[in-house]
Amino acid sequence: MNLVLFLLTIIVSFIIVRIGAIAFELTGLEWSLAKFQSLSCFSGTGFTTKEAELVTGHPQRRRVAAVLMVLGNAGFVTLIATFANTIRPQVTDGKWGSFFSLEVPPGLLPWINLLFLVVVGCVIYRILSHTQVLQAITNVLRNRVMKSDVAQAVTFEELMVATGGYGVAAVTVDAQSELANKILRKSGLREKDITVLAFERNGITTANPSADSRILPNDRLICFGKTDMIRRELGGLEE
Image 1 (tube, helix red, strand yellow):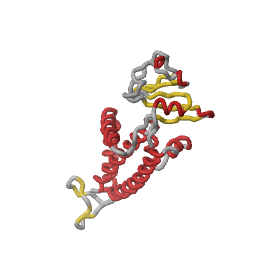
Image 2: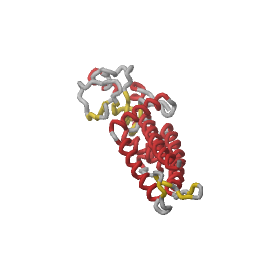
Image 3: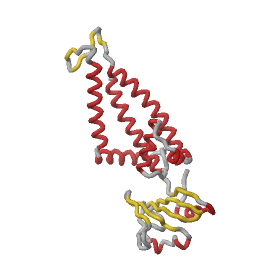
Image 4: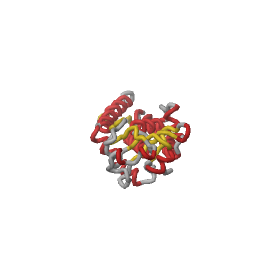
């Protein structure tokens, strides 16, 4: 029973970390950074000053991080307790435990249990690290998270603010946006003193796009200009 609980705790911990990464991504963090921050919060390690500020300075991310920290501590305690009980020789009806209906010496049983944990752990890791399996799990979890109140997707995020109200912001183009399916030349952004420095599409970043580049729904535009103007013209931040 302890062995099952130990393995179940590992699987549940993986799912929680993945949900946390998806929640961070919905708040505007890049996917690789979102995964690292989720694992950092859950394990309580790995923060750097700059990346910590990205989380602590954002209300939604702070809520996600707080939940991950609480669940991480609970999961860590559960893992230690179940691991210790799993490798500990157990006595049943005055006899030492058996392995595949064969009597096992008490000194050998903990090593058998440990070897079994390592083998099963490796199998679980190989399954969860398989690209197609991991992508399928992530897609299912992302759909669940987006339908829940875990985190709300943002369309606008200030990345850097300079003097005079100018700064760099990331904007996700909604399908109903007036920019959708327009080319940069005819988007009217230059007339509003907004410059598109780059755009992200399907995980690929195109820097310094040409004036004939077409803006598609779900593109993430990296823009420079007055942040108030960018917010007003291209999207609002929901918190």
